Each structure stands twice: as structure tokens, then as C-alpha cells.
Length: 262
Image (tube, rainbow, N blue to C red; front, side, top):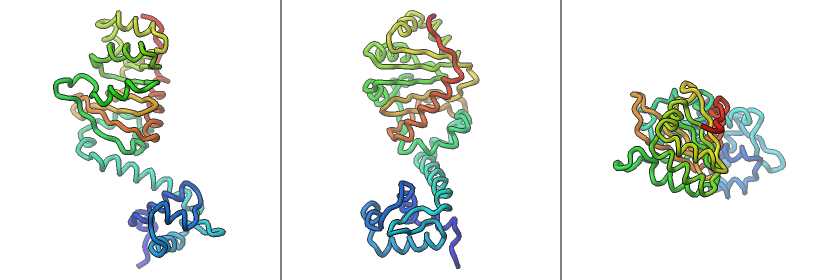
């Protein structure tokens, strides 16, 4: 029985790897063999299958995606990336309130890539895990958005800004009011430092617990379906995740107002 196009796309790791490779541009058979670390005979078998389905074409000894392939393969990659994200930590995701992530960003959740779940030490449950703090301290530009107040915010943000880190915060009204009422002096000090910016948005405009993005890494923290906050962070160093995190931060910043002084 002849294979369906869906089977051809998804039921062979060799074919998937080859299609992903050709997204970067045309390749010779030698480039394909060297990159995928395969022998001629097995990969030629897969090439013939893909050519039969009009997913790739050959011209002057170069193999490339066909017009159909250029439409289907990027969508295929997005689906595979999403599967990989959920499959990596299924138990975590089923307990999180994913509706808190704006729909356009949830559609691209696969961009988190090769992330890790980092949990705080039980004796420091209301602080960032030490791995996150370490990476923050080594970053030159830090962007934090948060709808949940952590007691570490005042000291951490001032410490980062005092040493010249470019730091921008987007807080909800809830977090800002907490800072204003309980840490007003620290907040004034933060705003008077050279490379600091603060924005405040409506509580309804940010439903995730928090996100961090720097030039080195990004971290995402969600509320559980029950509404409880466990301070778990999903941390990724992938370029795709950094881009996703920066766009998410810009999304919240775009609906927030700047705070110049208190």
C-alpha cells in the first residue's frame, strides 16, 4: 500500500532529519551524508521516497525542498518542536495554567527548545534558584516581567543595576503596589540608578507568574491550574527561546506605562 504524505513526513527519523536539513538550503549528497552522518545507500532510499512525494527536488546535483516542501516542512518543524517541549516534561505541563500564556506565544511554545525545569531549594522557596541568580549576575541586559511578588526582587534588582546591568522591569499593579508600600526606599533607589526602567501594566494584562530574558538565557514561571505558585522555572539557553522570551517581554511592555519616579 502506498504511504500517505503524513506517513512520509513523520514516520522516519532519517526523512525528518533530511527535511530539517534542507530547510537551511540546497545540499549535495556529500553534504547530506556528512551532516547527518549516514551512508549513501540508506539516505538515497529516503531521498527517492521524498522525491516521489514531490517534497524535494534535485537540480545540478543539489537536493532542495520543492514548492510543496517549502510550505509543509516549516509547519512540520513547528509541530515537532511543540511535541518535544511537552514530551520532555509531560507531568509539569499538565499541571500548569497554560491559558495564562498569550495565544500567539502558546502557539510557538516549541521555541523553548531544550529547556530544563529548575526548582528552588526548599529553604529558599521564595527566591530564584541559585542557577537562575548565577546566570542573571553574568548577564549585561536583563528584562523581567512579573505578576507575582518575590521578596528577592528589591535587593536583586538593585544589586544588578548597581553594577551596571541594564535592567528593565514590567510589573503588574499588584507587584508595583507591594513594592511601593513595603519597599519604597529601595524602589526610589532603583529608579535613580543609571540603567534602570520600570513599567506597570494592569493586573489583567499579565497572567503568567514571571519571565526573565537576557542575552544569555530565558526563564518562564507559571501558576498551577489550582492557582498556586510553586516558583518552578523553565530555563532555556536556545536562541529560539531567547527570541520567544524577548517578544513575550515586549508584548507586556507594550501594554504598560512607564514609571519615572515614585
